[in-house]
Each structure stands twice: as C-alpha cells, then as structure tokens.
Length: 333
Image (cartoon, rainbow, N blue to C red; front, side):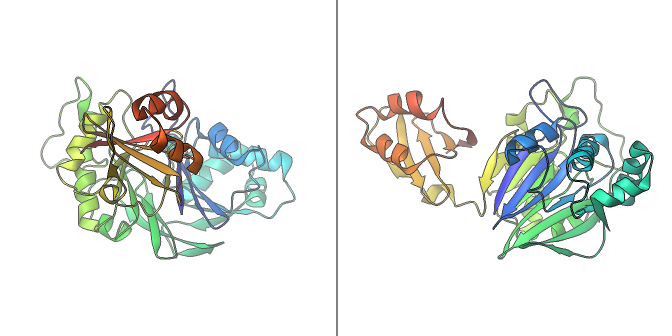
C-alpha cells in the first residue's frame, strides 16, 4: 500500500501548500481521500491526465471546503470528458453531496458522475481494498475513513476533537493520519475556556490518539498555516513512541513503514554516521553525523550502490541525492 499526500494545510491553502487531500494505492486500486483547495491539479499531475479515469473511489470526511472545494472541479472534469463512464463511488456525509448538487444546480449530473455511499455507514469493497467509516466529533458531521487490504490499513481522522472512536478508527493502522491543527501556536489565539467542546486536535492529542490505537506510524496533518511543524512533531513525540511523519505536499510513503533502526548500518564518512537502502520501497535512509535522520524517496538501486562506493559519501549526497529526491525528515536519532 502506498500513501500519497496531495496537501495538508488546514483552513486555507498557502502559497506552496494545498489543503487536505490524499491518494491511497494498492494493487492497481486508487482511492482519493478528501479534495480540498489546491489538490485537484496535484491529483491530475499524479495520475498523468485530467480525466480521473484511474480513480476507483473518493472518500470525503466532511463538508468544509478545505476538504471538499476541488471535488466540484473533479466532477466537472468527469462531466465534460467522461459523461458516459460508470459513476465513481463517493463515500461521504450527505451534506457533501448536497453542496455538489447546489453548485451544479441539478441533482442528475451529480448522480451520473458519482455513486453516493453514505458515511458514516457500512463498509464497502472497492477494487482490492475495503473502506469503513466512523463518526467523529467536529463542527459538522465528520466521518473518519479507514482503508485496508492484506492486513495493512491507513486511517484518516479528517477534522475531529477527542473521542473514544479514534482508537477504533486507527486500531493497529500501518499509518494513522491525524488532525494536528495546533491553532494555539498562532499569536493571539487564547486557550478555550474549561469545559468548551473541542472540535480539532493538537499534535499532542494526535500522539495520544495514535498511542491509544496502537498505530504503527503517525502522520500529523491539517497544519494551521504558519505553524512551527518541528514543535508539533515534538509535542506528538511526547505522547507517541513510534515513527512520526509530518504531512507535506508530494510526500509518498510505502506501507507498512519499516523500523528505521533496522534499516541502517554504520558507514565510513565524515558527514554520514549510518545509511541503509530498501530496494523494495526504493527508499534511502541516512543518519548524518549531526544525528539528524532523513529518508529519501524513489531512489533507484544503482544510485544507492553508487553512494556506498563513493569516495566522499557526503559530497555524493549533496550532488546526487538532495537535489533529485523528495525526503521525509525523521528527526534526531
């Protein structure tokens, strides 16, 4: 299973950040989860076209536009280019569909493009995966989404406050993608008075939720624009001992995540302390002498082999790895 991040900004997009959107891929099946502002061009770039033919289902957590705004654009692309194609399953709360109908001005085109499956509701089979949904507390009806196949699961909270259902949604997930809005980081935002209902999580809450669920890895998402994401990671790490990823546009992760400490071996280099390559996932993991650990994505085996043979591994990383490959920062060792 592969998780692709289209965007992870909460509330509104930034100059280089789209709002919430993800693609889960497994054995030829593609499921899109949320399509907020700015995600549609990234989805089409990922698919290599503008028809959406490769999308097997779309799941939407709730009606807020930072999770749905580009869904109408996807509808228009299908309506104008694939009107006669079979409808695509749309797993979503009713208000999401109502908003689409209002935008289109007619229910029939929406029903021709999408086959609505109400969420929260019964689980559904789509291609090689199973989708299930769980109601979670938010300002509007919100459905947490779980996608699983071959005993590997990735779960998405959407936007939520604390809830016992979070443990059910993320139970032993290979990746738990959790709301970590952390709006309290913004100047002038005061803590809510005691007893006020909470409808978004902090990074600390996200860490606690992942720990309670026994999730194998945690991804923090829905970042309030301008937040200190290193601080968010540290807050989550105080409550969760597993691997923590910070969602960012274009990030792709193969699941399940292999334990990082089993992947590297010491190397003879003035810049690198250890390095390891996983040919199955095409990931190169490097621990620098500073103690910082990075995982570089989509690295072919020949490049990894050349790194280990290089006279100067530090120079090779600077010249051939950093400029050419996306990465995940895994924090200090």
